[in-house]
Image 1 (cartoon, rainbow, N blue to C red):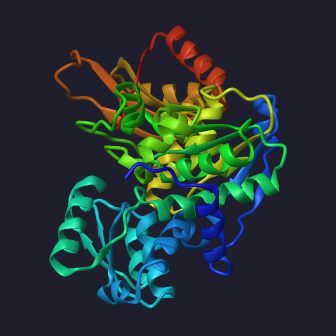
Image 2 (tube, rainbow, N blue to C red):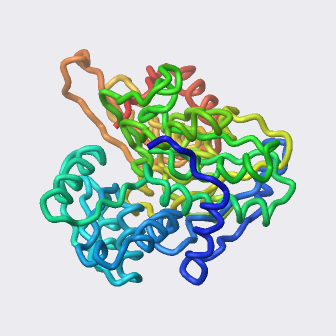
Length: 406
């Protein structure tokens, strides 16, 4: 099934979604505009019903089922956002939903999916493994499988995001959005090519789960042997056949960003733009900040989801602070004598850095007799401040090492 979705399909999907989804806000980002030297706008799909754009495609797909198909119920697989979209859509359309989620799916996403009325089964370590379980369930029970991205109705539903973008920001020159399986970027590209062929459409994948670059190089979908990223919402091991065709023919470029880039983007969105976004929803901004996407004409970054686990948010904020040079982890080796720890902490205080935690270790195979190691987490005012602090400690005779990642 490789026939491309058309503009008429997306426009028909919009009619189906009238009164169901909301036209999400388009917000100018002054901090990003100032940092990047070009006008940046944020399409706030994290403020959509169920916390992401996914309800658009899920609702269109389920709404087009026959009465007999809806009577059998629907089944889906997802790390969280598609799960919530399917659960919400199924409830609105009067059918039952069973959703397979990875065993490590964020608890808030699991709870929200159940809250929308779906039956949740935790199976597999990845979305790909959950997909297999969901398809097996569909074959066994007759439930209709609602694919998270590789179906024309889903792509058409997601494409309605682009219709809103072109209306809200008519001068747009580039649209940047995250890519997992490719449903959203495919739908956006369909609309852009039909209505504004001059608009560049750029997809962004997490470097640790980037299946599209090798697939595009090979000319066909390629499965990653393994993948890992903090952006669980786009951690997909293989593009869909249909979405691959759309991306290959319609999308200008697919770039990648690392987890450090994503953490930095999340921190900026939270701190400077007042937007609470999940890692997968921030990869477009991450690509802009990392210089992976050229900024010239007005650029719209799609914030595709906001369903972030609070515990992950704590870790990501810390990681973002570290990436920005504002959270420093170091180990210091020095002579083990009375008052040495107090002296070390005093010197750090004199440089107006704030110690968050300290681990004082006197016994370890790599320490010499009479030597002690102190592991510190320190808040600083930025990379220059961190460098100054480390240089000062070394000038005072301390051995300073970067602490290994936790």
